[in-house]
Length: 192
Image (tube, rainbow, N blue to C red; front, side):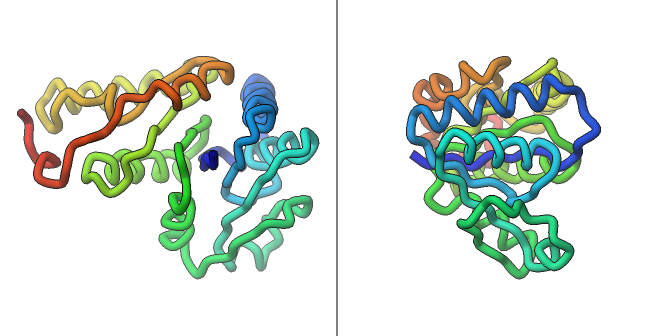
């Protein structure tokens, strides 16, 4: 199995986020899951890579050339793909990916998550999307999505688009038990 993990590069965050990231990394390695991530060396990206490598797991970084030029890449990761743009990077994240896992992050992480949800809604990406809600970080995100349903900007299918879990131990079971996405492009604009 291969999963892509979206997460933050900020290092000035609560220690609970680092602990959850490290625990998730160890759980993934224990199950022989290959990890794909943004390639960074700081914040949760750095913690993820450090933890996967320390546990003897496989990790692959995907990073645009301009980020590599300023040496943002994790020096311990040997499997790297460099892209020309952020758009190409996001497309590469999804190649061969069996599930997406989103950890807390900033605008880049939100943008990646929202794009993947949009692609799922449009039947362009149909794999499980799991959100690790450490410290309730994604509570307001889910409220915003629920408001879109309540105000009829989208149908009530949130439980099919993504799954929110509170602990790293719930991530792999959530992937295995995710609702299958079986809607096609013709269903995307419907409120039925």
